[in-house]
Length: 424
Image (cartoon, rainbow, N blue to C red; front, side, top):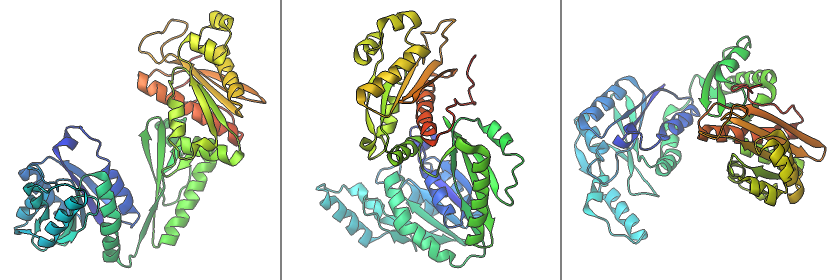
């Protein structure tokens, strides 16, 4: 079974918003063994929309559409879809009553243009929207099942889970084949190097895909088999081989972030963390505290950006700063040790670098960063040069800092990312 995903809206083509709906829809379809063969976006233009609808129906078995169901003049999906296939565009009184009730429930008065959200192509099945004013709908057209959902991600996702996927599962019934996939998250090695590292690995019929989402690289093994059990078994074997080959480079699976993995390890080991940040400006702490329950293991941090802050807030000796400069291994070590001691943490981590675009010298170029991790057993420090723009330099440094905490808790070597090698 082939699926096509079509997202509608000028704002998508202009790059004003990130089109996350395509990824969500494709991922959830794969869970029902339905592969997405095409994805496209189209402007709020009737002629272009008609072309996209007809093309999708002509080649796909399932067409999932998001966007264009709102009340304004540029929300054209329902009307244009009806016109594209010679259907009447009819008012559904029950849907209109639901929209009115929604407005009353939030204490607002419905404007007349909202009534267009209760119009659907003739023969459509209306899909309720409990958290918005735009119902979805589904039609059968030339053997394809076409489903239209709101473009607002939270409304789309709820309709997808509650209305669309159960209907699709029922339509699929017993299938003669199954597809299973996983997402393995890696950090520290570039995409091409990962591919070369795994080139001779015998994964059987499992197909391996690669995707870069800075600063990580994702591996996507996909297994196809006659049954769900067989596909799952093939996938399990492939993932085990990949993990064995790559070792600690694989840090998580699925939706796990580095910060979530680190938090789980800290909680599991009963250890605590404190941070002393300079060039990252609190970014490491932000990532750590985005994880619910971080207070179980994160004691706090200090953003010691200036030399004075390093001296006054962390107690770094002025003579050490004068002798080596803030961006140096001795100062990074002292920062990690000081923050660990002052917060009473098991692990202290420090970052100090030059994120640019200015501030570099011949001896200390833009991109230089020192990272240090202190435990009661000792302190490890290293330096790297990441030739990146300011935002990516800070993000990569923060990810290295978190990765070092992960590696320390796993008892493996603390290394830097080989995708951007250290300048010796």
